Image (cartoon, rainbow, N blue to C red; front, side):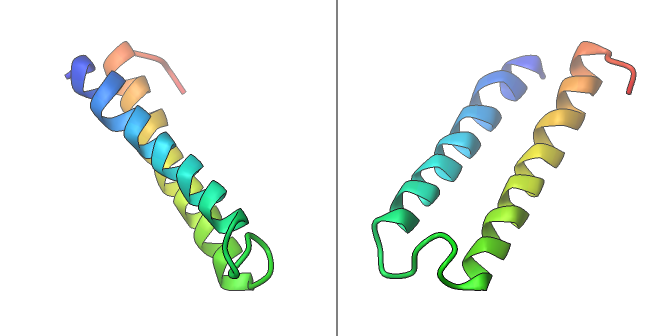
Length: 64
C-alpha cells in the first residue's frame, strides 16, 4: 500500500494542481478574476490534502 501512496497518488495530484494554477494564470479566466475559479482551487487543495495526509498517517502509523 505504501508504494501506491507514495508515487501514483501524491505526485500526479500535486502536478495536476500545479498545472491547473499555471494554466489559470495564462488564460482569460485568471486565478482570482472570477470567484468560482478560486473556490475550485481551494476545494482542489482541500481534496488533495484530505487524500494525502490521512493515507500517510495510516500507512506510516503517525498519531494525529
